[in-house]
Image 1: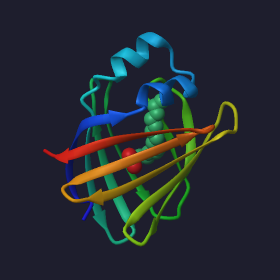
Image 2: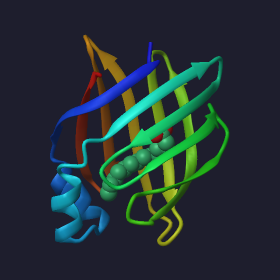
Image 3: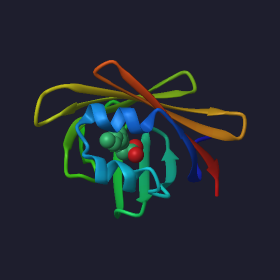
Length: 131
Ligand code: MYR
C-alpha cells in the first residue's frame, strides 16, 4: 500500500518542529519549500527508499525491526528502526548528537500518505499525494 512515489502536498506545524530540532531560520525557510518526493518499494519486511528534495537525492534500504542509520539534510545523524503496527509504519530514531528521540509514523489515509513527526513535545505532519 505504501509502494509508489509520494510528493509532499502540505505540512502542518513543520516550521515549529524544525525549530524544536534546532534547525536555523534560513534552513527552515528553505525546507518549507523542499519539494520532497519519496519513492517507497516494499518487498516483505524490506524497504527501498528513494528521497529527492531541493537539498539532495539519496537512496537507502532498511528492514522492519532492524536498526539503521540516517542523516537529515542538515547533517544531523539518527539511528533507529521502522516497525509495522497494523497498517501504520512506526519509526523511532535517536539523535546521535544529543541522544534524544524522534518518533515518526506513516499511514495511508484515503489517497494520501500522512507522515507524522514528534520530537521533544512538538508534533508535525507532512501530507503527501501520489505523483
Ligand atoms: C525513510 O524511511 O524515509 C528513511 C528513514 C526516515 C527516518 C526518520 C525521518 C525523520 C525526518 C525528520 C525531518 C526533520 C527535519 C528537521
